[in-house]
Length: 324
Ligand SMILES: [Zn+2]
Image 1: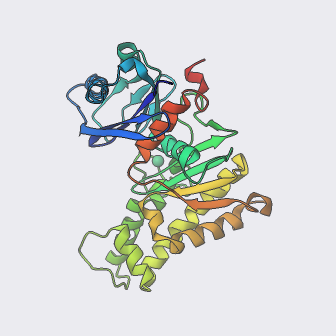
Image 2: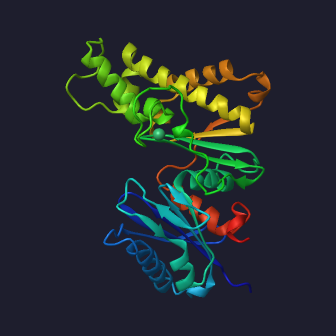
Image 3: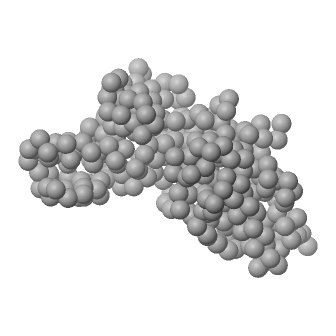
């Protein structure tokens, strides 16, 4: 009888460190979570090691029977060196994450950002199965992407490629969270859509949305569905800008499929139709759009763990440089 083999997927979020023990078949065994240990820069790798020990112990599994550990974290991070680079939502500086875990547990360990994890989860288990050239775009409080070209995850020289949220779409436009102006994220993310609506309301725009109250993109989407013109205009504007940015990427990468995730994409056709119209308008040839698959993401909150599983399970095909 063949011995069952295991993978651990780890997701480091702004609040929680989550770890899920899987069989390599992708059957989930047990998930645990703890608040991210931010007591010092090295605490996070110790925390992950302890969580993996605990998961193994509780399930009667030897750490040596782990075949891979995949870690997904909010970026920026250097997946080649396996370190976090001052993530804005965590109080860390440059934190080596992979090396301490590999040394302690002696298990192949890989680190990628959460959008790269998302594209892997779709590639292995969602709408991207069997697709060699795949984009994942998330539109939520920020905008991010994961790109697979010829079955390889696009990482770039330092593992910081595929930042669609920070392509410039409006020079001298509003300030982005990164400190530069006019980036897509500053114009079309959930945060940006809500800010645009709030500014218009302050200027006296007519809308069914409440004045002097926090406005969420969900409220804007609901108001748009009920015919509110300001909300519709906000989502159409964001959709068009996202479509323009995607048209730029279509020219460079010519993907087979684009998978759209993130809370704001739940707004549906009001956002996605203008997006598709802009993609059509800004591409040089209809060939980029003929047979292009455009679909919604299969995973929600679990996406980091599923992607980490895909990464741990594949071991190296997507990020071969880690083994080179
Ligand atoms: Zn930016």
